[in-house]
Amino acid sequence: MATFNKGILGGFSGKVGTVVGANWRGKDIMRSLPKPSQKEPTEKQLLQQAKFKLAVSFLQPLKTIQSQYFGSGSGVKSRVNLATSYTINEAMQVVAGVLELMYNKVLITKGELTGFQNAVLNTQVGGVLDVEWEDNSTQGNASATDEVSLVCYCKDLKDFQIFESIVMRSDLMAIVTLPSFCIGKEVEVWAFLNTEKRTFASNSFYLGEHTVL
Image 1 (cartoon, rainbow, N blue to C red):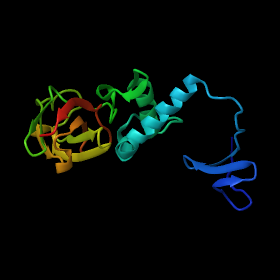
Image 2: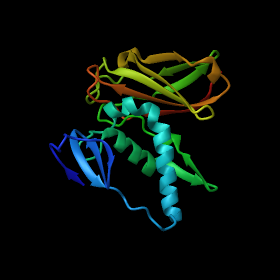
Image 3: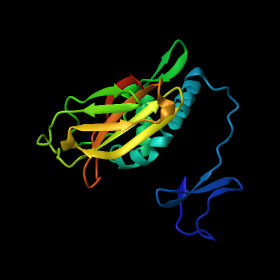
């Protein structure tokens, strides 16, 4: 791979002859086309490809959140890439030959902000989710004005419902209502906190799987 400041006509994107041009992290790069492999992929390679496909598909709706709140984003990998790598390496398992996500290990956000204290979720009729937690706004780098967000995922529908910055840490409660099409379905729920200035976040907290009433 090579970088260049100015080509004959400036930077370019796409395939030209035997090279491919692209813009990566603000730099124009140029690389040769990969040679097609004549070998059949191994089981390990097929599994890794399946993991990557599952991770990218699952995380796509979270891209905006994770591009802002997953790790530091320093070095070669972007925050989105860090989230993908984490999901592949830490939040997947194979059960009876089937690759699946371990939702209790999925992280929506990853950061240094002090998280929740004793957060619990209850369901109410009408698709209502009620989350409560204890006040820890004086612990670590926590602040009463930190913002609370909830992320809900229905695996049957492959649907995310995201509620960003709905209350503050000091409110000690958040109530959201899911769409009617979620009623009767199982949803996975996470919550996270971010600073009022939205500079960084906590690790997301898994609130469990719940039946929407």
